[in-house]
Image (cartoon, rainbow over all chains, first blue to last red):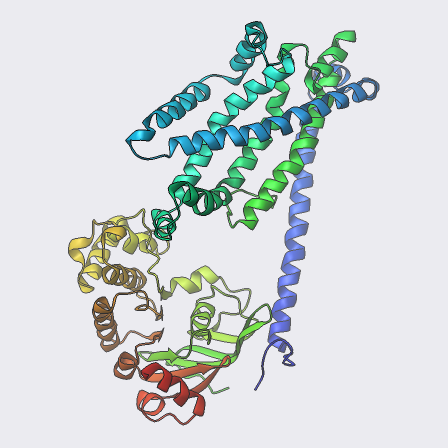
Length: 288
Length: 249
């Protein structure tokens, strides 16, 4: 009698034929994907290049010399975006998790916590991010609070953190509430306190469920870090491109900045897709 | 390989399925004739569920051939969706759609797969629910039903499109003991109406009553096969006897 894979099993002729058919199908699918992609890109590219204004657009937005000249300054600016993103992301996780836990508390005693959490989310989800940056970026330093820096960078980051935390808190809350009540009951039945149940049973499950959605917010944060440029004194990629553009009114640096932002977010987006697939969510949509 | 007769609905020959290094089926041969009720028995992990999932093409076999209504359905050129539309599969944990009503669950495939008009689908769905004794629950949500009722809805859902073969995977294992009877009674009715069935179960008394053929799965193959009187009443193989004595202990 045959046993496991080391049992000397050899695929039968019919199985070998099936496998070779599946391999041929895979090759065929890849060939069709490549051909259709080439055709679509060719048609779109042809339409753009043959448009009447293409000459002027090409000069103003796609000047190779200008791109090379402005690249170092814009790249240095992008490093600022990355720093803003990383520092803000850490602060956002802390603030939003606190808000989410506040909003999911139970019992009458915790009512003020729920009230504050709800009001916070209502206010900062309602305010446009740009408005928060204007208000805090210019108003924050004017407050002259002791112990807090007055730099536009600090207040710009604070705006991002306050605004994004409202969204991310709602993602966390959805995750916490998606963990079935029976899990809480099981935790409490073991003698864990409410907080211990939250920490050791609910949050570890909630966290895994919402991670793909959180990664999506992180990609979005990466781009929105560029909005701090409106404060003028933080030299990020967009502000750097603006300065370069002002020299001769050639807009190529903006295209350079856009290209660099894409280079930054694409790996992030693929990482999100990969993670979502690993978690068993198939709705995130990969490449093929 | 025995010559399949015109009355053969399903035939498995040398079916192999491994998950990584774990070879679950290592060469299963099985024949199911029209109107026959085949009951699979065997220990947990002996491959009973995997066998049903392979028959339904939910799992791709690693080797061997499965013939359904005279067609080799393990051929990769075969449209698996079309094959599945001619079979009914009932799961251990019902797997009803919680966002649809009971009637919505029963009529979904009729409307979306079989192209039946909504009015006719509702009519056939209600008739099927009446047959399983749940006509008055047609507007309820699955979550509002007991386990036994949910499983009867799941059977109605699988049966409503007149499948040529019903596959039932441990359909009473998740039920409270007092609810098992209503589901087994329904299966006995189906058997007497001539529905072709392959099911796996731990209910030996039921297997003895309803089965035409009992197959004992062990080590990835059909270890012993025959009538219930032979396999359950007077097993010839040592492994079969050991399994049955553990069940009865």
